[in-house]
Length: 100
Image (spheres, rainbow, N blue to C red):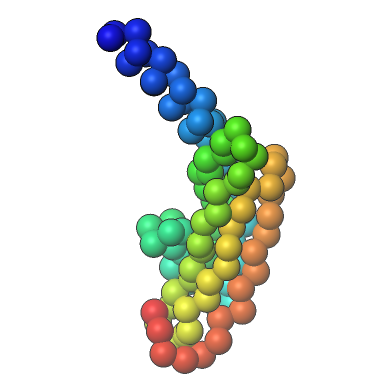
């Protein structure tokens, strides 16, 4: 019985895979927009972020939604994916409108 639990844990860990992080440089015009990733606050622009990702053995990479919010501007969104040990720059041009 105890051995079954250990094997279940090992299988679960193998399926879950390893965690990693991607680096993203986030800029906006105007600067000072709030950054959210999957709904959680990550600071304000401009910022260099280390975003955690989960990879699994099926080589399926997790995707995350980044959104920028600023009072008086429309909310902007994009999709983040892990791209190896490289840094990706995201440059948002915020449009006037209701939001924030």
